[in-house]
Amino acid sequence: MPPFRPAWILHSTGPVPKIIHATLPPSVAHPQSPSYLAAAKKQANYVAIFASGIALTSIVTVFIGYHIQHLTEELEHTKADTHKHILALEKRLQALESASLEQEGSRAPHSETKGKRSGWF
Image 1 (tube, rainbow, N blue to C red):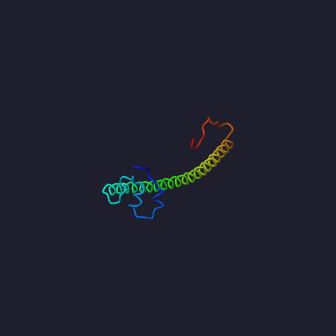
Image 2 (image 1 turned 120 degrees about the vertical axis):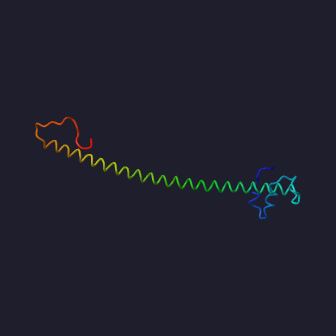
Image 3 (image 1 turned 45 degrees about the vertical axis):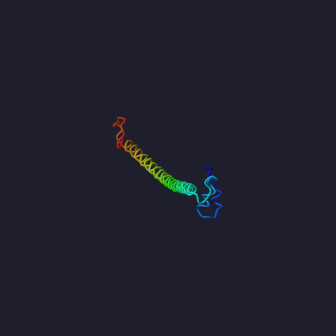
């Protein structure tokens, strides 16, 4: 079978058998022969399968692209929220450390800390 020639299909305005006729070998090119009809039907099935494959591939590609974009945006928001949470925790830690230092400064001079931190640590 000759190679598939989509340009002929695009330029043809005739019905499907005429389009199929352009891609069939000359030995089965007579429109009334049973081999022509069988070959035309087979060729039409191949064209339909090919077109369905292209459509399905396009749909899947768009679907995957949409989800990748959505997940990327969600990751950026999560990253920003995590950064804000880390900054808040750092501020809280600094406040706890300064409060701990103030408590140590207000203790009597004879009390000693044994190297342990109070609170969460």
